[in-house]
Image (tube, rainbow, N blue to C red; front, side):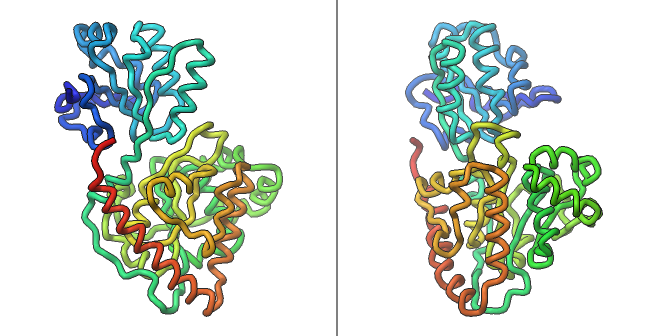
Length: 371
């Protein structure tokens, strides 16, 4: 059976009215053929509270009777509030049986999260599945095939794209400024959605350990007075789609520092995932360091991708202390920026083999059947 409302579902956003969606692509990532499903997509737990606004009473009754499985689509976000709201609202208040619910999540740890929530509440587990929609999103986007990692001089060494003002991105840019590494890279960070260093400083500082706090306070004036770091004239609202406007930056640097929303355990505990920038780097044949939660590289390995251990010190990925992991990442950025001519030539030759493999794997996986 298909998703019953595949061409007539709703997306629930926290501060906005439900948005009608005329098509879903979730059936690319999950095989819904075993039974009928009713899809409701949501941004976070708060938005899921609008569930009754979009699900007809007769459908709700069929879900309660386990004749239809409710699929909660949270494939773009990894917020903990979603599984918590499923238990506290959908199961407890609306009397939907746990066995009638399937949660599709961007959190690679979602099964562990669900197990913990169910155990804490003394309730049965709902079904849950991690999907990585960004991989398919990138591979289905038009692109120029780049001949990166050429044997040449590189005045700029790395690329770091930072659209939203996340704590980890502010921390990274601060470290790069203090170590005089900003001039070695193509780095973006511009005022967006009302954010600025003035209104983001205290939040960033709350994420730091005592040593980093002291370091940042010593350099506060030079950090908060950084100009907008702009790489192109694209509106920040439109920066997420894969475009070819940044191709020159990939061609004229030899590694990326890629990161999304998730890094600090204080911000989003028990979360792991892969952002679109990781797959953008693969599509553009660029080596990368992940600015993300610990132990994310094995997720890529499980999908058939290779990473750069031996060329890049990837021990940072095993470090669970967020502040130490950040320091290790910045240390490795600095080391890679200072490769001598022989070291750089070896890096370029060997990394090219890996990026070519990853490019092929990205498009091979786009052809794989649903699981």
